[in-house]
Amino acid sequence: MLIFTALAVSIPLALLLLIRFTPSPPVSEMECARETLSKAVSNRADTYSKKLFTQAAIYYDSAMVNWKRENKRFLYFRDYEKVAFFAELSTKKAIQAGDNSITSTSTLKIKLKQKIETLNDLVSEINKLFTTYPLSSEIRNRISNGKMLLEEAEIAYKKGQYLQANRKMTDSEYLLTASYDNASTNLKNYFKSYSVWKNWADRTIIDSKKNRDYSIIIDKFSRKCFIYYNGSKKYEFVTELGKNWVGDKRSMGDKATPEGMYKVSKKFDKNKTKYYKALLLDYPNDEDIANFKSDIARGTLPPSAKIGGLIEIHGNGGKGIDWTEGCMALTDKEMDIVFKIAKVGTPVTIVGSLVDIQYIVNR
Amino acid sequence: MKNKVLMGLAAITMVAFLSSCGKVPQVQIDATNAAIATAQTAEAAVYVPAELAAVQDSMKVIMADIEVQKSKLFKKFGPATLKLDATLAAANKVAADAAAKKAEVKNEVETTLTDIKAVIAENTELMKKAPRGKEGAAVLEQMKTEMATIEASVAEAQGLYDKGTYLDALNKVKAAKERAVGINTELKDAIAKVKGKSKPAAKK
Image (tube, rainbow over the protein chains, first blue to last red):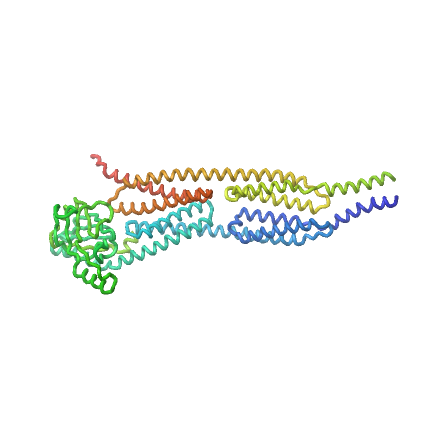
């Protein structure tokens, strides 16, 4: 009887004591860790602060593993200290990850916006300067690919895919900047002789006034043929040039249009040329010959190179492309006018450009 | 006396019952984890990331609840089981939503690919009619280069589509379409300008 009474009293008492002194798990710490992780995910820390977020997630998992392990032990011997420790670490890292993600996202967003604007400005500049400039197909392809990547970057940016946008933007920037630098250097080199060209053109116009006669000036960059009479511009035609018109003609077959002060040396009427009508120029002049010899001597041209000739202003133009072997082509109608006013000895000055590079850049 | 003994035994039986009846709903846990894994395989992280994150978070809550119960002397897994059932349903929905979104994006890629091919074909025809005088030809040369880039980009998008990476394919093909449409507008404007110029002026 006594034994039973003792049992009836001691068992619930033992249970109460067991419950009273059983260690409690860090429920609130775990909840806080989970909520912070969840908040970090909503702040896209898993993408924009991957390292910190991964650490936070690992700490949370460690807390759970420890919690599970402790729960397998007898109630009284459980120790949740490590669980709380990892939960707190997870919370700390998740807060850092979330904050870091917000800062990085906002910084990246601003940076991308600025970069998009800068690159779009660069594209406009490239379009303005180089649309009609004969860039190599490699450079054109690079520019085109750069533009495409910029477009892709903009789409990714609008969708909030900033990392993807950044990758595309970096590739685009590399292609566009390198191409622009390359093309600009090329253009600057082209304009190195501007002061000489200007001098030639001024002298040609002055001579036209002095001689009360016609003079022809060809501007390669703007692809214009100007006819002056008595120092005043009478006609302005579009001309087509050699396929490789950038730079001075150096040798036969380079498909370049020469630069210099020439004169009409011969006139070919309809049945004397396959290009409707033609004015043969006295290319090469003394300066061309001297330059050619110097190039051979310096080895910049092979000894077998020939200087070339038969540079003409002729008809059959109006194709809209630079197609000649180095000549200047006008439409047949325009050629009729030029053929009529020109005679043997009429000055024909061919220049790289009548305006300087600054004008072209700022126009 | 007898009553007391019986009460004591009843109390011991009750304690034993209460502390052992709560079994971890392992079957439901496994099923829900499998459903989440299926959702992940269905690329929920790509197509419905917020939904997937919500389900994963719910699972975390449940697993914490289960551990809370396991920490107690008197375990009660009923509420966790109910939550698991709800999360299982939610995970299945996430998988379905991911598949639906993926199909939607796939359709969008297909439509855009069809559209862009039509624009490219139209641009090729317009190029033939485009004015060539003055700077026209040089501009056309540039457009040709750009069209080649667009076609290469479309081919890349098609490759991404074939691999099933529809979101990347969509971004690529959309960018290509923007550029193709831009060229189309430029060409149409240039042609319209020439047509406008060739019309005889009205008498005044």
